[in-house]
Length: 104
Length: 119
Image (cartoon, rainbow over all chains, first blue to last red; front, side, top):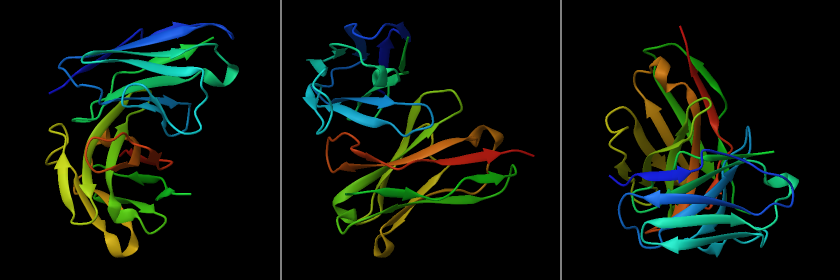
């Protein structure tokens, strides 16, 4: 089974900061990786797929990179609406990372 | 706009059975797979399994195989998640999500169904 490990688990930041979240796969997954944003009481929302392709309507301050086993999600300049929990997912066998809570 | 509409919250007792639903809008329901994702209170996302509504072919996570059943009725564009005997540990939010066939991310999510199992 493919395990996904995100770091950090919690990230404290301020509006305007540049932040990076890392996701590591236990096996090579090519670029079959997505990033989701989840706000309290809401369903997850797809941000990025195929490791680096921005979903339609997602602000360009979000970007993704990586392939193989190492991946990153970067938010270039945090906005108040970005404080949420972020999950990576490999969609070969659909495992999610444990999540990164981005807080003020 | 494609939407997934899920059935309402449920409160059940241990040992009871339950079926929750996820209805897709539009006429493309059978062009996609539907996955189910569990989120226990305060915890992360866990993929449970997927179904192809065009033929009802299913694929389960080993962690959930044998404990839940996925089904679908393409005539009413609805997918189902079913338990025959609930446990307290099944208390969670359950999301359905759409994804295209093959290696694709989950691009449309339902709002979730909260299931509480308590004696």
